[in-house]
Amino acid sequence: QVQLHQWGAGLLKPSETLSLTCAVFGGSFSDYYWSWIRQPPGKGLEWIGEIDHSGTTNYNPSLKSRVTISVDTSKKQFSLKLSSVTAADTAVYYCAGGTYNYGFWGQGTLVTVSS
Amino acid sequence: QSVLTHPPSVSAAPGQKVTISCSGSSSNIGNNYVSWYQQLPGTAPKLLIYDTNKRPSGIPDRFSGSKSGTSATLGITGLQTGDEADYYCGTWDSSLSAYVFGTGTMVAVL
Image (cartoon, rainbow over all chains, first blue to last red; front, side):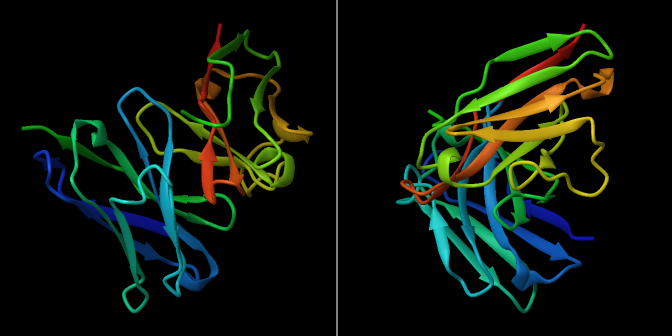
C-alpha cells in the first residue's frame, strides 16, 4: 500500500517561491510517475508536472517557466518549487503518483499567497 | 481552461443511474487511456476508473467507464447519498505533453 505525506509553507507573499516536498511510503518508488496537482478554491484540478525516479520531468506548458520538480530517490521523496508566486497561485496543492493515472494522493496543502 | 469538458452537474434519485460525459479530442481521449476521479468534499481525489474501463481494487462495480471516439463516459448505477461528490476525467494529451483533467461534474442525489 503506497502512502504519500506532503509538507511545506502554507503562506507566501507575492514574488516568493513556493516549496513543497512529498515522501512516499511503501511500494516501489521506481515503478511510478510522481506528480504535483493543484486546485484553486472552488475550482477544478490542474496538473503542474511530473517526474520519474531517473529525474525525467514533464511540466504543464502554462507553468513551465516557473516550475521545478526534483527527486531524491535515496529518501523516496520528490519536491516542487514554483517561483514568483501571485494570488492566482493560491490553491490546495496535492502530490500524487501512479502509472498513466493517479492512484495515490497526498493529503493536500493549502498554499495562500497574500501580501 | 481545460481541454476536457464535463457537464457542470447531474442529479438523480437514490437507486437511479447517472452518466457523466467527458469530451476531448484526438490528442487526448481519442488516443489515450482515460481515468476518472471522485472528490468528496474537503478530501483528495480518489481514482475510480483507470485504463478507460478498469476499476481499482475496492471500487464497487456500480462504477463503470467507457469511451467512444473523443468522448468518455462514467456511469454510476444504484446511486447512493455517499456518491455526492465532484467527478473528474483525466488523460494524457499528446499535443501538450501534459496530463489534463476535465472541468468536473458535481453529482447530486435528490
